[in-house]
Image 1 (cartoon, rainbow, N blue to C red):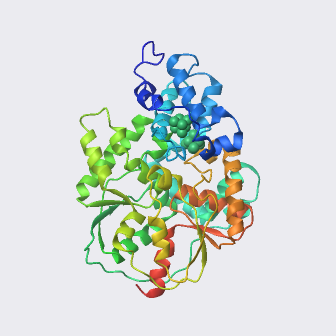
Image 2: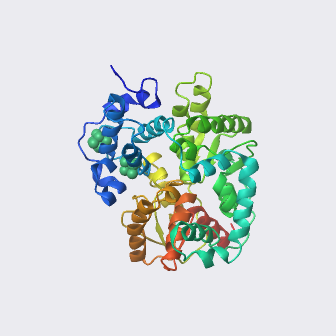
Image 3: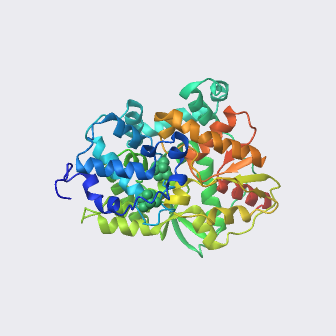
Length: 420
Ligand code: SF4
Ligand code: SF4
């Protein structure tokens, strides 16, 4: 761009994507922040206009109002599938945040979380302490207090409310291939039961599991916050770990992690040393529901419960995986699946958004809870730890009785009911 105000910035590299926007406005009604805040600057079209203005120099990257509108984006990418011009909005947002990162300081809470998640020696004790706390009545007792502390406690309380299930020991012939699993930070720390369930259901469905030692956080939180160097550092370690595993597929049961791992190629687009390796790794990544759908999935024993399904944004919009999670639930006899109105709308979790933009996050969660209430379902199935805790916390604080659960836990309980 002639006279670019931010030459050589990540945003300057995203100019072709910005130019693809034809300002039609088809994305506005898909955007939760536009619908809640009713400000064009909080819509995809408005934010793309701000991105262009940053490059043209008509607004500055240290302008607090520009930063506010970019910060208020959930990164849910609901604007992408509805865009007739194929604007890669997620990539534009990532480039904008990386550019703004150089002109301001990240909020303290976000800095602390990103610092800890990039270091296993800090992450492990943090998750250990969180698990200990979650096993006590304290999170439930404190979940009703107002503000973010109460919400954080409700999130923690929600992690201990999975379905009861019997034990079974699956055997596999591995006829559908070899799989290495991303353990994940929050999944490994707070949803370890789901990780173990994932291993079992993959085995039942003919996959043979292989270890991927040395794997790290996927880097999604860092990339979404604009800390691209940290995200790349983590991604390099994962590329090495999953290459060494030798597995055909990489199974991911957290939609946010799967989305970025499928886009590692883009993360290394300007790095000739790592780009090919990143692309090859991305091509092996599957959401666990995709692997199960490809294998059948095998039908389990009856679970006579009422369930509704909420699609994680990074599964539905970023990975465009829509049917596979439903086929997982369809493999459970007697499970009654009740459709959820606006199931493709964001729940307001969006990584650490619910901690740094609590008001907008609450506003986005409110209609989700109202829609869940009208289904009268006892369980809300969703395949992402952030969504599990955001919806789970909302259900607890609204005293609704229903619980959030990963679809894999339901399939696992169904297999346990059948004795596999
Ligand atoms: S739908 Fe796409 S092209 Fe139309 S305004 Fe939104 S981002 Fe731009
Ligand atoms: S990512 Fe989500 S919140 Fe952000 S502009 Fe797109 S639809 Fe709106």
